[in-house]
Image 1 (cartoon, one colour):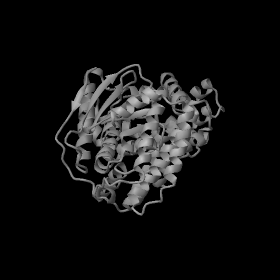
Image 2 (cartoon, one colour):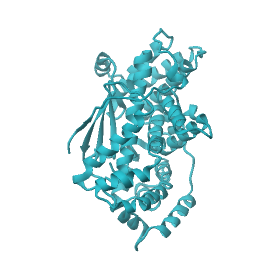
Image 3 (cartoon, helix red, strand yellow):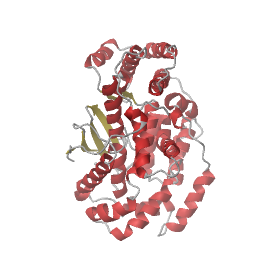
Image 4 (cartoon, helix red, strand yellow):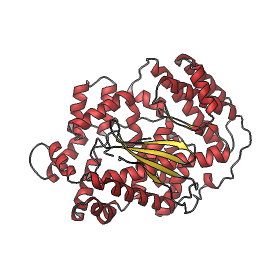
Length: 442
């Protein structure tokens, strides 16, 4: 999966394969003894996987990951169902899942709800690829099971006013912010060392709380010519390929974001735990496939964004003491840098608002791009990349910040107001290892 479309994110490949250590999560879902007993949902789960693979024949972005039987993939390529057929079958399979009585077991009941939500997304996506257009909110509800709250221009103006007071220099605010951020871009000859240190530390901290399979690893690749900042390609067997787009500036904060969001405890860990606990532990074949435009992405992106703050509550100290020296930056500037990034974070919902207005036809392309430059303080190049992303993924943008906020609320509510960091990790990892939907976070 991916970090936000405009993340500044990694010429050589780097393999990270270290011995695993730590403890298993101790929550209810993790303690439950794996069971591969036959279930009335097994047949519909197989049909669901084949429907997702069939949908993948109509767009290369539809299937984000698949590590199930190759024969099923070959069948999808050979059969090549029409979008109409996929949509019709998805509705039929969903009805078959609805006909299965709600299990008494909480995890099995979650599995049933998961299949219902995923099948709704498959049917919706088939209609969309056939030409049907939904409003931004209706689309996000059908595909991801959530609707983003609305934020006014006045809210963003208040943040901009504060930035005007805090950002040094003269000239337009956007240019001043960009000049400030450029001071913290990692030099190309130091990039690998900085990313290596950030990822190693994110992995070390994650493994204090969860035991991953011995074969767990990922390859890091540096790429160009992509519309996104970073991407995780999960390959099964607890392995991933993580790519970083070096066309965009690689700031030192983005190294931390990449390490946690794409790797530990983000996408790589999420996919690994689903594979370990649900596919291999219980034989649930629906977790051999990941349709991008589905509720899975809401949980994946939201948990990956929240994982950054969970893994690095001391981000300022880590940047100052470790990454700034490696990047050749002045550690005395770390505090100012972190404060600026935190203030800019308050503008994060601007992407959602402009995407909603653009998808719903209330803003044209040029006006939407200009809106991003004003309220999200994006450079012209980054604003153009954002518009390209909105045109291809439309309401997908809700999965990041809204997903993060709901995951944070879920963890804090379940962990309790006096929870220790270890307890928050426990709740978080249980979420990653279970078939929960966005509705389960509320």
